[in-house]
Length: 198
Image (cartoon, rainbow, N blue to C red; front, side, top):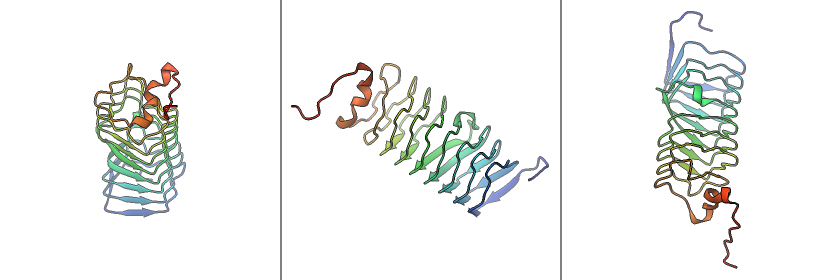
């Protein structure tokens, strides 16, 4: 890997089926690059920057992202398990997630305004103290996901499932829900809700 402190810039490149597993990437900047079927599991991507990049069918299980910049990055069909996004570069931090597994990851205290989560698994994901204003959880599974002191104003939960959040400890003004998933707001009251009127 690059041993000097000079940054190597990659622009408009496609990386196919590269195995970065358990490796450390240093002093790299990726602009408008595409990564297809690459393995970043247990790799160390600390202090590298990815801007306008697209990851497809990549494995990010337990990847280290301390100080890593992700700006306008899209993940499609990726496995993103157990990643601590709260340690990323806060100034380069914007994503879209499509058909990806983000189970056991944490976004604690991050700004995720207008983030689209489409058909994602977000089991046990930590959104505590996140700003998710105007974000969309489209057909997402939020089993065990944590929302505490989170800003969920104008957030769209209409097609989300298995979520549970307490409006008393989150900001939910103008958040969107469907009549069928309102029970996710009432779980703490342990109510018996009848959907059939019988």
